[in-house]
Image (cartoon, rainbow, N blue to C red; front, side, top):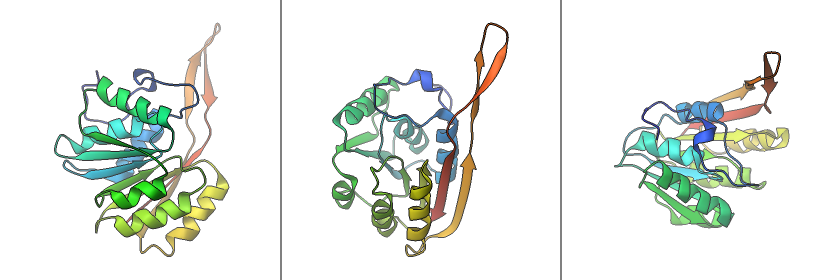
Length: 195
């Protein structure tokens, strides 16, 4: 279905469900880049939603790697599983439950990508930073200013280094009857750091 190694699978290729978020393709491409994934990596996708990040990460990790996708929404878990099957990926494992309960049961990750957390981003950051292998990367996408403030405050006590903060605003074209217009999407702030 997607024959390229580069990230940025078009959103329209993923199966979607009402009320289950998807990380948009351009944001996904940046997050995957910031995670600096390698073949064979163990990757957490916390708040996996539709599974779009899991799919992209699994392609980068290859058959010898694994993506551990966590979400508290059973619809999101089923959707992630369907999207993994849709792209022919067998290296995505899903975990239904609260991230704070699931994370301690998982093997140590090489990379962590954090999406929706239901307001528990700071606690999830603390937990993941303690488990992250030396040299590993953590990437957090935020929409809310309050979440960003929590992340930055929490990072100070997590022994993470090389912190990078990027705010991205994407405009996508849409054809109208008279031409093409650009429609803005919500800005996303991506915070990344190394263990």
